[in-house]
Picture 1 (cartoon, each protein chain N blue to C red):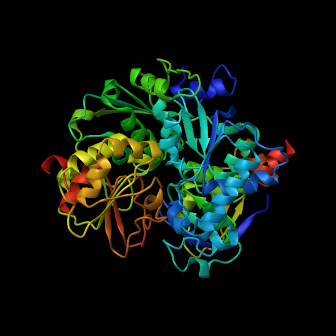
Picture 2: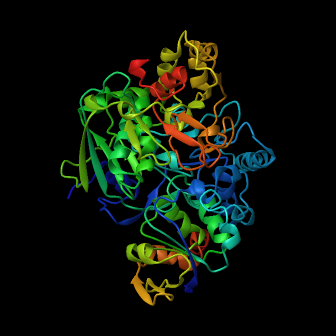
Picture 3: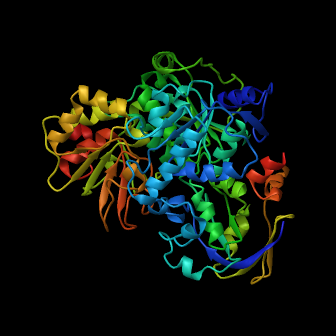
Length: 162
Length: 419
């Protein structure tokens, strides 16, 4: 799996799927359209600031709330290459793996990395490097089973190859 | 080491003699659920899979409940897409306008989920069926697609937290107060990745509707599922509703729990979750006068007959506060009819409330009661996140049907006992 590298957008605890993609936009399932409203209710300017490859960093329980897969789809389609968090809500965690949005859990990195820092993530080793502060962190690498799903490019391809 | 109730159900569905917390398993599914928001995405995914149709026509339920009757053209297109898919694949349990209800009230009522089941649903409140002694959990649309195609899903076997419910709840204390109290106690990630297993003599005092409400909000504590033991009340409910055989599982006496909480139901007070997280709980005794603009009584959490009865008993012969919008939403067509026969609907309309067709509508800010800038709503729904019911500056106060109805009369958050 390729490394992610980009600049950081920082968020706090309990970022819920309603602020990631408000339900008023769920009458669409088009990734490009969803991306134009990504994070709208928590940071109205996010869609204008985000650049391809950028990284989201948040603290506890990222993606809590609804099961809408539109949430990781919107984040992925907005160009974000990876989400780093202290913990993820479980349905968001599954959804991100299933649609191929790279995510990684690391408490220290989630707390210490600042908005605007340039960060690189090596998914094979779970190593997270803050290139701005020159600090490295060890994230939780995926269990082998999930790594296989990710390597296939998501659950659909995994099932097709089985 | 013994297994929890959840672990026993999962082991049986994975054809394994035992499972341990953290183990990755593949389990057979008894039912796969989707709604009008999540199913279209799942249909797009299943179309990419090299499969010939769905695994079982009777073991899939597609319930059009979030934005129906269609709130706009795009929603209409989504429902049409699901309707066409259901027709093409001869899905038995497709519920559209006229037959539909809010999915988590509808499925138990139709007897499609029973004790001992493993159920996945592309809706986070799928955990509701734990009230019947089933393992049920919310997933996303791709998991739903894989479930529809293969009849299987992968799970990481969860560890569990035990909640011992003791004693008899006081008047006006319902399942909603119990689960809000628990979420306030452990936080919105207090049960992250884990089962919430409810036990204790207090359960005997709880109706099935109370238990559905409690299991429904397990996800609001981050839980993978919430589950109740099967007792005489469960068996009576299943006798009236189940369409197939059920199986009773019990936790082993030596099952391991990561934590144990004892909740004295007799000491609980009506509880309200303040904006913008379900864990921000206060009892009605700790609340100053908070003026409100709207009341919503309904949803997969609290739109069942008993919820409407509690509200109707409080509103009977009275008028809602001037300037307040009160929206009552029976969760299914059957509940609507039963509430009509019992006279509750007349009570609501005479009091100045409105009664809607079943829909998730306002709970997720879809339609049928959207809040303007700075408005406040007391709602029997399940989430009070920023912008959940409308403008990002609006506020949602989660409460029981009793608190919601009492507040509807006064125009501010009110203790039903003082009304």
